[in-house]
Image: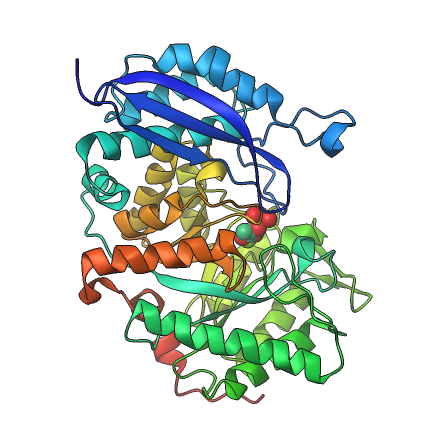
Length: 439
Ligand code: PEP
Ligand code: MG
């Protein structure tokens, strides 16, 4: 029997960083080794992403995953028995056919993604290679260590909507190594906490471990971030730049945007103007979901105006879907796509999205979800896919730090030359360094 043949597969219920239940799958192979993966869970979800199947009802606030776990044990396990874990495409095609629904609502995206990733791990283990190497083999990419985006303040759905913008992040494209990115970010994270304490705020953290946003406006958060970068001894816009996830689908639809904190409603043109002002005033190199997922007109207009200045990432708008990336390129919307494996539901569909992004010249950012665990599969995907960038939340809490630390380990295996530094932001950050910012 083939060493990577699947001999056993089972799911169990485990728990994520929000204390919610989630699905873990373990796959055994003929060679005796196994692979394991856990499904993450989002809070600000796109309407077109694979369904996170929950039991409903009153127990565990309706969040239990017993049906998804049973779907793996009762339906997926017999289907995949004796299949070759090394043939990820065939495994994922079988999962997709068994589910048969557009949003994976029958088996559950959580059941499917945990299975698909566990098979990926099992295949790597059967080959006795690290996961990143197996992923690189699947795609013929050159493994590289990604440039991180790291959250300093949380917001939006991750912080009780205390501010409208969901992620205030930093990137360190001017760093010479992955380790240097983390060191600089650690200083900025701490400086931001000290600034908030100095203002008399008690400091808590949001869902992804970024500081809880005690601000009177979205802009005050940006101001504080700039001050924190300075307090860490950096000149904003030089080695360090700002990245925002507006997550606009959370407060906008049909071309109207309600900024709850500032108690005002903006139309499409007004929010584009507001974000344009931020781009001019602050060293912002990347903006995710600047408009809502249903606002293609806005996304196109924003990209036309600012696509040469900043990276514009589609998350809720593109939901890790190859066809949506192709359609966005046709419409002239966004120039980058977030890759969340659980939005697609399988590894193969995520690889297809990545291939579409590369074909259409879109940058790629592998991303965690706000509900995470100790699972570090996405680090290996980011490296093996040569994605360029990685977003896993803040610089605190173990479900986040596990990912940054795993990248350090992979970096040691790869050697220092594998860090991509500023390359992913070429034509944006490099070109804008000389602009000078007013704030
Ligand atoms: C995001 O919007 O990019 C994100 C990580 O949040 P969530 O997982 O809640 O969708
Ligand atoms: Mg997002």
